[in-house]
Length: 114
Image (cartoon, rainbow, N blue to C red; front, side, top):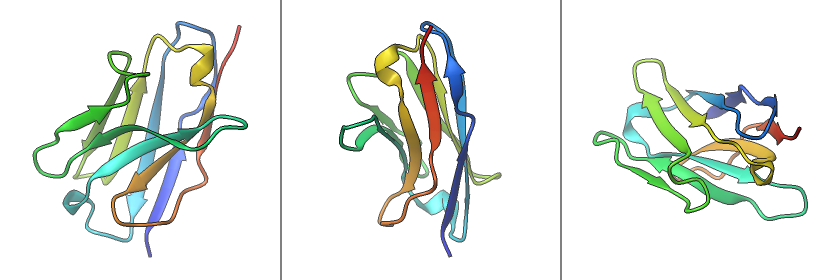
């Protein structure tokens, strides 16, 4: 079955960087658009970034554009989110997601605080 396992979160100071990873299994990874979402306390889950299959076209939410970079390694079935210039408002649980699959991984907590 589809499995998505996120990792790489942690506590970072404002202005710092983190790289999140998502290990995918149970499906032909290279065939699917992959995304990162986040959910801050008391807020709805929001789409942060997507990366297409094959052509690797990316999309970013305005709130992270220019600071976050999504990438994928189809040979390793991995999707990444490189986050820089982090702000306190980036604090959230981050999830990766496969297009056309309703399930979620456990997420990874990112806390931006001094």
